[in-house]
Amino acid sequence: MRRVIYAPISAYRLLVSLLSQDLTRRLPPSLVSSSIFFYLSGDPKRCQKLTDEILTTFASVENIVHGSKLTGCTYLRACVDEVLRLVPAVPCELQREVLPGGIEIMGQHYAAGTLVGTSPWVTGRNEKVYRDPSSFRPERWVVDGVTVTSKEVAQLKANFHPFSSGPSICAGRKLALMKIMITVARTLHRFELRRVPGPTRSAGSVRLGWEAQDTDQFQLEDAYVSLVQGPNLQFRKRRAAGECLNKGRVYKRQGV
Image 1 (cartoon, rainbow, N blue to C red):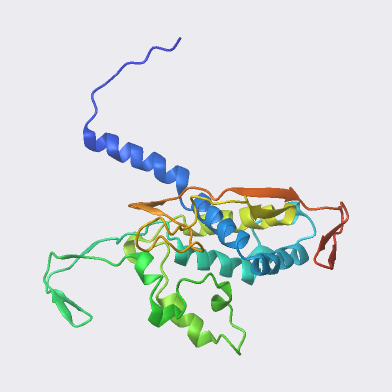
Image 2 (image 1 turned 90 degrees about the vertical axis):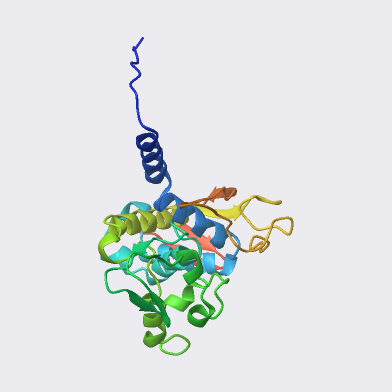
């Protein structure tokens, strides 16, 4: 039996310790992966589109590693960006202190020492930028030269800071994106998925309050970081050892 010696600890140190453990456990790969699977399970056409990209890019799940093939999956990256817009890891404002001399923001002057900030959850739903902000539409991030131009995508990215920006930008953002893309790609390469039939607490409901009634939106709680429940999903291993059949499509896999 191990003896535990209790030592005094300040409330502040305890709070910081608990928050640090919670942050490392939840954010951002697990949150984003859960969010992507929620939206894909409610949108079979886009789920199939992403699956097609993954199955035609990678011959086997062992090939899904960091590299040019993974970063070249434009629709996968678009799905990740779209979910980071809809379900930001930190939904509330990240505060900044106005420097000496003050600053003018949108025609309003703020004196030095004022704390200002913008909420990623709000900016991600700016109708002037995203037009249909409540819709899960990864295509908005993919330039095709016809329906989506490079100028439009540049405007989206100028408003898009899922890992903050400036001196406080997340140092692990590239590692987090890599882990998210690998997790999603390997999961869809191996499995088909669907939501568990029946109501789920991860989706909105008419019984819930303002901005929580949309059944197509993944619900989150703002506790400085985003807290979510679910989604509850069912997975089925893709059939056939040497090929994958999906709605009439046959993908031959080499080396399987």
